[in-house]
Image (cartoon, rainbow, N blue to C red; front, side):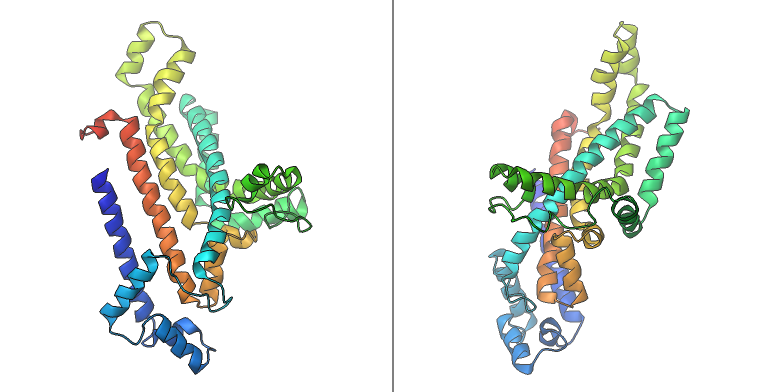
Length: 334
């Protein structure tokens, strides 16, 4: 675990270095680029002084790392607000969407993968494989737009966007997660409104990504289903229900558990399109707006946030795998 943690930190440093170099390679005058195409000369000079852009490149990198790891990310040139405070506002909104989608992904992926494996080569197996392959192959922007058109326009079951009804006042900010803050503040109406607005974007994000979990679950369960220890347990007289629960399902989900942790990182950095289509005020929409406005002082820390999410998810996946399979914890091969 210590070796993995050190490796993850080195990966983060490498990504930060790449981002720093790219932001300087895009334009020989990064101060003018970061300040924006319509910035006044005084603004450009202020940006240059703020980020030490007139100093040699190693000096700039030093201050860049110091500011990054101390949380002094500067001020958003478009809004005038602290970039760190903006990121802290948007990240919990994305976590709410990603965690809700991940719950649906894991439940649907394991359930359909199990049914598919236990009906191998049958009509149910074929139908489920078609569904999850179709979902996995659907582009995110297309699936999101179709979901809005079908379930918010033609069949107006859910709202087309937003986190809650426009007439509501948000609950006191405790965790930053709207639904959780509504529960902690005993705001039932806020909770129901937040849940109502969450269903469609979370379900859409889950539908577009559950195919991988279903595919891995099906493959793993099939491997375990015909394993020697399962045949031995069946020969000893175990019932089919107990055999499937204790020997097939439990041992077949090790890879799914670790993949779920990795998928959390994928979802965190892959919500840009979904949040934009559903007007969900998360870090993905924040990143999209920064890209559209060439707002590099904002875009750089946002990319680093995505990177940290992926690195942490992969580290947790390694830890979970070693817990579920003692052979990995002992340094043995699987």
